[in-house]
Image (cartoon, rainbow, N blue to C red; front, side):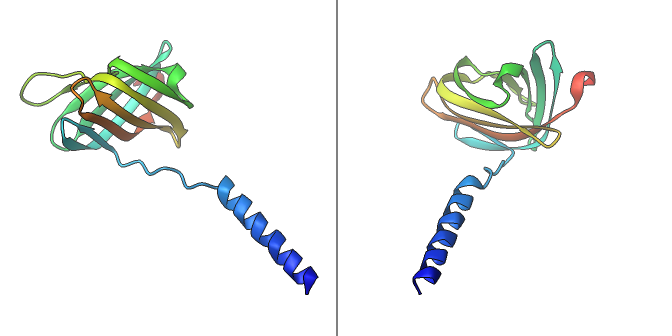
Length: 141
């Protein structure tokens, strides 16, 4: 009986360790939250040019974002402050660049591109969040 209990304890310990090592990947929602609004991303792509990834994205309601982030962001979480790396152009009205008071951006390699997650606060105190997969189109983008 002691042997069976010992085997069960070892099996449960193995399961606990295995479960901790296989955490579920975060879910990318393909959204940007700013100014109290959430925008659904319908297209996002990027390409590497001289040490930075140029990125374009479009929302389902006609806002276009464009800009770049340093290649050094890939594979890590980086602190953000100041102008955000994307400028947004609505179909009507002026363009805007979020002014980040504090926050982070995480860029992880994903199948044929990157998962980008931003959790930040803008200078005015509002949230700026971004969760997007962007396809890497290479240097010909």
